[in-house]
Amino acid sequence: MRFFRLFVATLWLAALGIAASPAHAAEPTGILTFSPPTWKHRAADRLINILNRKDCLDDATASFSYSVKGGAAPNGTFEVWSGAACDVPANRSATAVTKSCVLVKAGSALETRIELPFRDMIKPYSTTGTEPAGEEACDSVAGAGLQTRNLFFVVYNAQDQTSLVTSAPASWAFKYDVTAPPPPTNVGANPGDKTLVTTFTAPTGESNLLHYHLYCSPVGPAPATNGGDAGAAGADGTAGTDTGGTAGTAGTNATAGTAGTDTGGTAGTDTGGTAGTNTGGTAGTDTGGTPGAEATSGTGGVAGTSGTAGTAGTAGTAGTSAALDPNCTSSLLIPGEKVPAGAIDCGQLTVQGTSGGETKPVLENDNPYAIAIATEDDVNNVGVLSSLACGTPKDVTGFFEAYNKAGGAAGGGYCTFAPAHHNALAIGLALMLGACAFWRRRK
Image: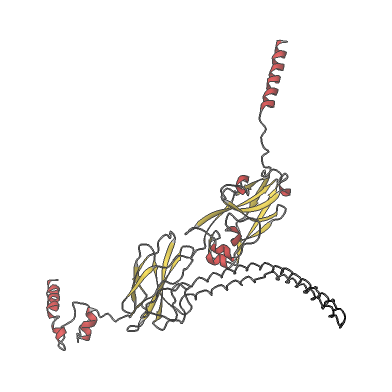
């Protein structure tokens, strides 16, 4: 009996413990898997997870295959997000204080493939909606150098935002740089033998530079236009039209009264006898009628207020012109522009610790050349051309070349030739040749 009581008490305590346990959210019951992407509109020999500006401008598009299985997952809301920790519902919320995710595309958990344009993968985090990004996305990235994001494939319950799947892998990481590096500055050029020897100042603030590319062109007249033309001034707004009210019609003057017309009575005409006493009738006393008072003139309507003149349009910003040396111009190499077809590829320098270097010996001596430099980063973005420097390659005469030109006839090494007798320079080399002979005897 005692054992039975203990058993019942144990069950009762266990029941209380279960009832007091807090409820936990249901764990995801589905599994989402996806494979690395294949790319369209992109060179096949490039790494699949390192992208550049050309990929963006060419509208490169990644194609992912995926699978969603288990529980209610196939019926959940399926989306792909780009950013950091986008598998956390709070980071996908429109009310998040700090935006770290952007919706790339919505799809279906019942499908097996989805295509994601690179432009949509790098949209600013402030973007809302699923409208495809245009080419402007290639210029919207803040920061220099390589940027890193992750793609998250999520399936969730639209009612409470709870995740319905575990993703394996958790995300797909990629890096990108869609901003071409600036060119070096303060470019200078000195003559070499069939070369130009450059000096320059490296660009600052760039962490992933790879090469400097040297481009040459014969000196020639510069193109007619350097830099963009100034934008046309905006047209002035049309002035508002005055619309004064119509003046009131003046009151009409009343017609004056007609003057009285009575005349005096006829004078008496009796004669003889008692003098007549009749006097002439009293003269008529009617006066002219009182003139009618003039009606007050009506007040004119108040003139309308003049409309405010439209604001003149803002003048367009003038195009920036690169500073040009009037003595160093090229019809082909334009500072601030992309590398043109037809430019001479006259060399490449590694970036590390470089502040100058020599071109390849592909130039003609005694002909003046212009040279410009473009910078390449490690995702193969090539920037625009630097300012120009000019120089003229010169034949550099070495010692033995000078000796031979002076008439020296020996060969086979610097200690095997005999003094020449054709020129004073050859005679001047005799002391050195004697030293060589002494050295050979000692051997």
